[in-house]
Amino acid sequence: MIVQENQSLFDIAVQEDGSVLAVFEWALANGLSITDILEPGHKLTVPKSNFNNIDVANYFKGRNHKIATCSINGNNNLPEQPSGIGSMIIGTDFIVTKWQEQ
Image 1 (cartoon, one colour):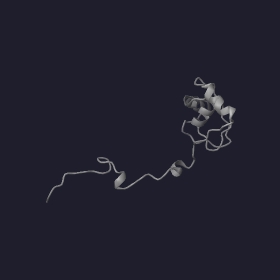
Image 2: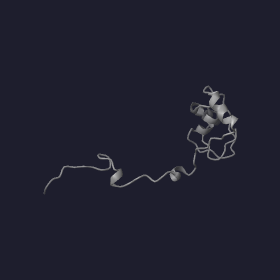
Image 3: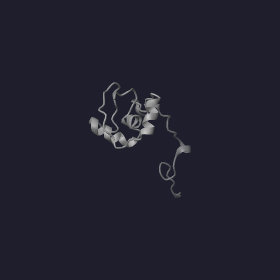
Image 4: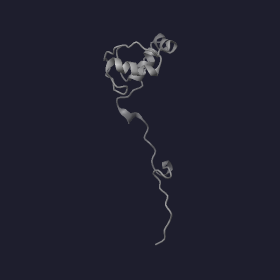
């Protein structure tokens, strides 16, 4: 199995075995962490999976779909988190205290 651009082990597990649970088998077979960033073109050892969902795997294989949901840019592609009074949570980042006159 050759890693495509922006693929994670989760993508590969679903694409090849039809189940996200197979991610642990892929990680163990290749000496990787399930959250490691994969290099495009890297060859992975294909494990024998106990978590096959043939229908899902065949869906992607039959359409020649490659799942690639990982971004090496981290959170740079996500929308900016809201800030300001409208997004504050009382008791967390908006603290209300009793008024004391001096």
